[in-house]
Length: 164
Ligand SMILES: Cc1cc2nc3c(=O)[nH]c(=O)nc-3n(C[C@H](O)[C@H](O)[C@H](O)COP(=O)(O)O)c2cc1C
Image 1 (cartoon, rainbow, N blue to C red):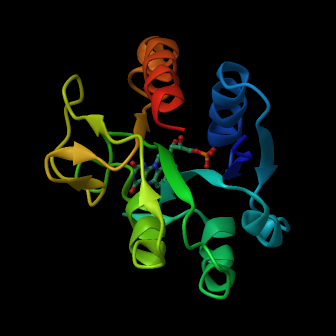
Image 2 (image 1 turned 180 degrees about the horizontal axis):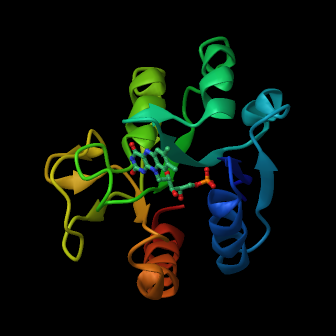
């Protein structure tokens, strides 16, 4: 059976909360703050990586620190899914850019991307996390659309279970 690890970076606790809510929907997953746990990424077959975005399109601080250690890990053959939290109204042109920054770092290291999602139902200008008209992963906006979060997590984890 695949070992699934969720690794989140969270400055004010929003992404941490989402990580735990995703974990509730998936059996047997372990959840880690990426800060101080970078070395554990290698222990899992499936990596579910979550981050918020700060500044204008900057990666969350702990993830930014962790990026260096990603390049020294052997990620070949792992499946990777992303979830991002952001604010599509105030930061309409950098919405959840953070997950794209992680993806751009590891996309050529032999990982398989799973869990892309439709952009329908969001209202933003631009996002680096949109590739081929889809988000690279689950997009969560607790500032403007928290009422949709439960159903988005439910739909995403249901799809993920089919490919993990
Ligand atoms: C100063 C500031 C800058 C932000 N920049 C962005 C941004 O560029 N893109 C985005 O989608 N969200 C942005 N956000 C929204 C946060 O990413 C969002 O509130 C997130 O859920 C926080 O998660 P965390 O507590 O796990 O770090 C910003 C928020 C603040 C306060």
